[in-house]
Image (cartoon, rainbow, N blue to C red; front, side, top):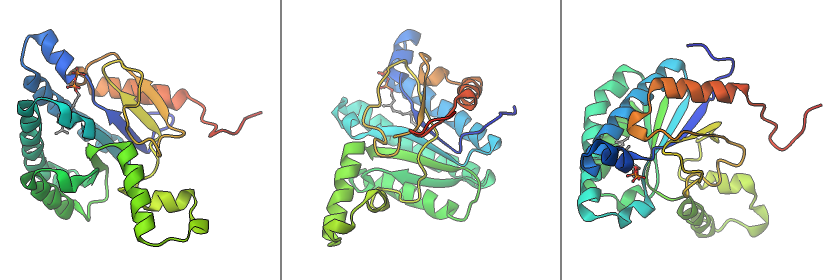
Length: 233
Ligand code: FPP
């Protein structure tokens, strides 16, 4: 598949696992399991297409409000995913990264995150970034706290200062934000970074999202004219 213009950084709100499960008449956790399989396919495809970065919203700070069994299952799934995917990340030259309050995740999950980051640190292909225990307002508040703790002079604070204190200062702004499950909202995801990001929303539930849907989103993106607040003739 060839595209006129490829987004360098794609961010995804993977929504609709629960509704997919309901539609199939299976438990919500089966929906998350199917969601993890979808994620696998999309990661592989983004790497193959030469996309530089893929950020997946895998667990929000708001997700702690879900029933205990569902949270436990998501943590187990995440840990298994990290262990299972590590050799594939290596084989496909994918670098692993995270954003979010990682220190509040279960220790066993943190250990696997650290292992994946370490193992893949010299890989040069796609960067796969998982947003875990992530909330954009918390990210901005955490950045402000670090700025104050570092005693930065108030007159020296500008947009670049703030960016430097976000969870991953190296992260470029996303070019394209994909949301599955049909809702037209941002849900506290990357508020600082999506100022000029192109949105693409599909009613499909995340477990049904395939590489063909990814191609459709990229094709639509490549047709859009981005002006970044400026204007063309
Ligand atoms: C939203 O579906 C999805 C989540 C809260 C979690 C996302 C997790 C996965 C896709 C699986 C794990 C992923 C990785 C990369 C290991 P929902 O439950 O909010 O669906 P609903 O809106 O239909 O209820």
